[in-house]
Image 1 (tube, one colour):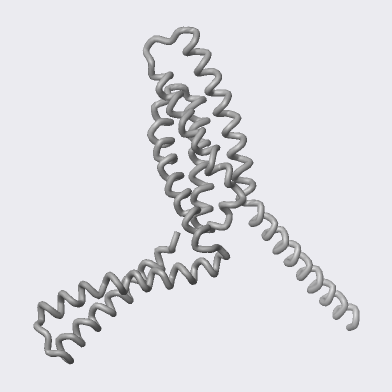
Image 2 (image 1 turned 180 degrees about the vertical axis):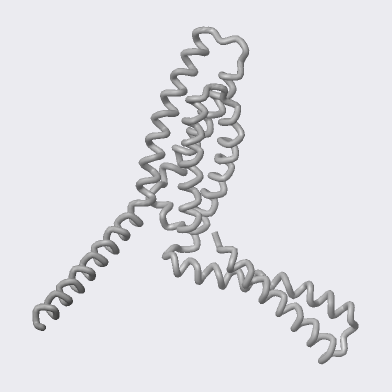
Amino acid sequence: MLKFGQFIVRNFLNIFVMLTTWIISTWNFDVNFWIGFLLAIISYFPSNFIIKNIQKVRYLKKVGLTRSEYKHIESQLLEAQGELRNLNRNFTKVRSISTFKQLLEMNRLAKRIVNIVNKDPKKFYHVEQFFYAHLHSASELTEKYALLSSQPLKNSEVHLALQETRETLEDLNNIMQEDLHSVLATDIEELKLELDFAQLSTAQKQTSATMRGDSK
């Protein structure tokens, strides 16, 4: 969840540490060129470890999470990526156009929720059940539906199972829409506050302009 910009900064600093190590070892201590080069490469690993941990501590302080909370959310996001890959792999195997559209929408919802939490990990606590249950259920049911729908011969039991799976997937789709709303709830509230503030400021400016006009 550390940002790409942090990765760039970290590696820039690592390169600086490596160059500094090579210069000091070869110039100040008269070390052989290749030994100095080897020491520079070795210095990368402790440098990267230290800088990454400093970045992580600052990041956790910024987002208001403990190290254990961050580690748990990170593992949940990693599992979610696997479930998303499973969804991607299976929904394209469905032959029914209506079910394909349904699963495509579910896939989009799931990706959006995961991306939002990846950018703002604290939002994980608004949609815990999405990660613990909803996404996993969607992945398993999609796999089951893809398997059943690919069978060349379908008896009444298979048709019934397909119908029940479609209905359950529809329910899950609605639940995941609610999950998306939950994860966006704080953003919506913040937007409303910003709009209210902007409208109040505009109204005050208009009132002041009117009063100045009347005074003339």
